[in-house]
Amino acid sequence: MAPGLNLPEAEVSTARKRLYILSEFHPTAVKHAQSLFDCILHTDPEAENWRSNATAILIKDYYITEQDLFAAPQLRVIGKQGVGLDKVDVEACAKHNVKICNTPGVNAGAVAEMALSLAFSVAREIPHIIIRQRVQAETIRKETVSGLLLSNKVLGIIGMGNIGQAVARMFVGGLGARIIAYDPYWPEEGGAWTTIPHKRVHNLDDLLQVSDIVTLHVPLTPTTKNLIGYEQLRMMKRTAILLNTARGGIVHEDELARALEEDLIWGAGFDCHAVEPPTLNQYERLWNCKRFVGTPHIAAAVNETQIATINAATDGVYKFLQQQKSM
Image (cartoon, rainbow, N blue to C red; front, side, top):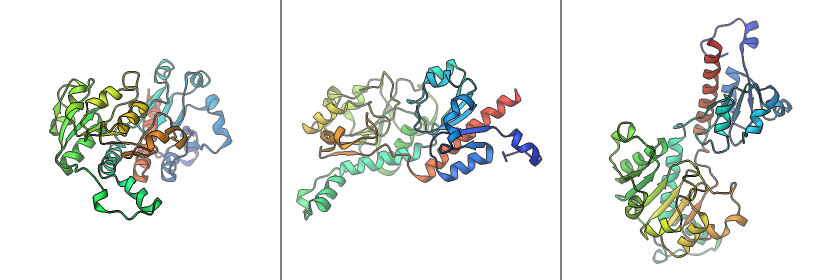
């Protein structure tokens, strides 16, 4: 039963809204959704009929196009796990008066920890050493290993939202980093950044030229597509590390591979690729670069975060429908 409701059993089934769950979610999160809604799971044949019947849907990696919205005249709200909306036609949703309940900020800690993990992996060449030791059965001698320290370095953050803030706090608190931040859309004053020591720049080149680590936390838009290419990589220090836990396509991947092959920067750690899921056939050149570490978009793939993000999306849908009911 929904929180705060005390209806007789006979009234509960008529009062509860139906929610079409079109993606696979953690069982604990599904149980939470079932406490609020009559749920149609993605494995139920009825899920195929969501366009005809649904007023509310819950999605993860699911494309919603304007054609879907034309075919779904009853749809009023979409619950979207996570913050990214690159698979949802946001403009079409606005035009069709469909509310989107995504979950900005809920996964910030998990993504920030992934950025930190990738930074250490690249700095100390951990994957390459593991390959030498396990796959090539090599006895590792210290004189054959190189690495970088991450303490007291300059961290350049591109994108000053929730995840950028979480990354800044981890690097400042744990590693004594000095923060340089760039975001042309973030307000000049106020907000969470007032409690984070940082210098703000208004030119991306100014950040790239002085940062020891550059980390990306922006959405993929026409403006940010290929934001970092060969020319930008040439500006960076030869000992710099580039991190991308945001979206594939923000960095021009072929030009990154070229830059790594030419030792223009120390290395790169990515949790996202322009083509997902990434395959060896697509990414052999980039993955063969000694100090490139790539993971398949798994920064938020921890149980606590998975449950928290989908619960937040579910609660957003429930709150929206309750508000509509009271209008």
